Image (cartoon, rainbow, N blue to C red; front, side, top):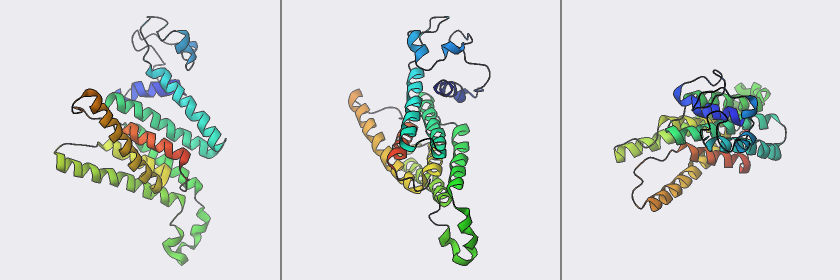
Length: 251
């Protein structure tokens, strides 16, 4: 899957299809054979260069392949071969692709976050015992509170609402945009999968991570940062941490 994720990272920002044309060298455009796309192994055997034009291959490719394999192993170790593992793999894979796109292009594509929100809500729907809702007219909305689907819906609203509020305050004070709508939709997607408790954890943890990295970069450069740090990778890393240490009440 790592090879496909690299295709997504390379093509989605420019609106290209991730299916056609087949994988090719970004430099010479030569169609790559299956043995040129074996995760990690091909990169090592080719010494990080294209087989055909000898151009250097970006180290991003093996890093993404390594991380995608690590995600698979950790999920199987933590949750076993279950439906939850399948959905979480799709979630963490989306975060992986989003992070590298945001680092390189400072954008978070809607083609990932909007379907991601739908998939997160779909999984929460699978996890909800809809049979108990038959008594809704008798017991009122108390029977709905605490169900996975409600947890996810609140997570979506809270995730989007928090960043909209923070971004609005920042823009009001600093007179410039601090957070893009891509970050808003990304945290909404995270809320769909992790619920409102996950959103709170991710919002706090990503802010701490972003602050620490920002300060370290400024210290290293010896002056003001001078450019915006992409926030998507910090949101994604915090969400990944919650996947393995959170309670998953929403799932």
